[in-house]
Length: 595
Image (cartoon, rainbow, N blue to C red; front, side, top):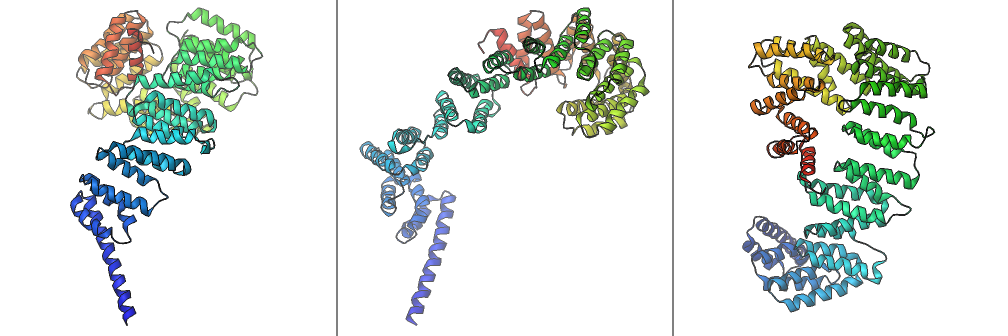
């Protein structure tokens, strides 16, 4: 009977302690530290001291009861002699009490013990970091790294994160790169850290870029047999849109490793996507200088001609001769289909020689051993030429063939997009919209963006008006624009301005007219159209497009003052614009900043 009574008493006492622990912790969570301390003081006399230590200790610190906190931490150190993190708590208290002598003794004892218990260095350092004792945390890592017991351990990543807390960014970058030097297999991890640092929570910081660049330059210059840091330097230049530096670095690496030009060829593709045609041409020239046995010789020839054709105001006669000479040199077969396809496109859209373009494409489609993809590309351009000629039904037929043969690929999506555009040109907006809705989810970002752009044009300017007439006129003008019939397209657009002056399409009309005048090399009218948007339609979606294009025009004309003015306007008035990064770069270039 007595045994039963004792057992029941113990059970009751245990439950009571559990309830008190929960109540005390709730007080602690609610910031009612005095109430928590009253309960914890009683609980600390029992066998649950280790479980309640941290909230008890923290409550004492937060209420500035440092003497009591010292006793509690010392008690915990006696109960748990193996764990060193409680030394950090005691160090904190001595500093709070301004007892520098005992604080220093505690730190020295901790270092002495840490040298024997190397495995605890991370937990001890983290304890220091928790209290914002960053230098003390660093000392722990340095102590272990310098110790004979370290066994080649390094704590570069942990030290890098502490340097970030200390805002010692240069040292942080050094630690990350030092870690990568020792552990090249962790490239992805380090790149992720550097990427987050460069992104800087969405706020561009030139110093971040400079620290990473200088660090990578230092390590890349020491490379002999490796090229890890040289490749990362190219990655950094591309991230920061320093394309010329990326080209120089890539060329140097290609020469050093005696490569086949693949690195430069891939780089040129990116330059083409970003409309840096001169740099793309430099890449292709470098590959062509390797000789006709180089793996990318044919592709470099093809893409160089394409880049030359995309540059502003190309010499069309000279380019036509270049095409003919390269075709004579390389011949006409399945390996040069892309070259012939590009030549046909050039003939049709630049020289308006539709007959020659048609003959070239028909010959291409009859060549033997042509891949399905290359044949589809030919059919797409052939359909474009038919549309250019006004043969809409033939164009639809060839677009449909490509869409059917390549349903779930970017080629098929591109064909569907071009079919949707024909429906748009013809004023069948409902059907066009249904196709565009499908294409918005295309795996090709370019196709998806084009579909989104046309879809928004239709929905923004059709659904708000009971009459579809202005939109139908605009779509007809777009077809004329596609067919390079600029004068007729401008006259057609002017009918909307004259008869529907308050329509939501007006800013779109001025921007489309700018694009036409630009193709006609009429700079004065191009500027006039953009200024109209800037001055009268700054509230509309094309405001940043107008600012950026006007800045580019003035920069090309050598008028840096006006170019700088409009780039600056983008930075201050359109911070979320897709042109912000490029505008900042060009603005700094004009200002003469060292990038």
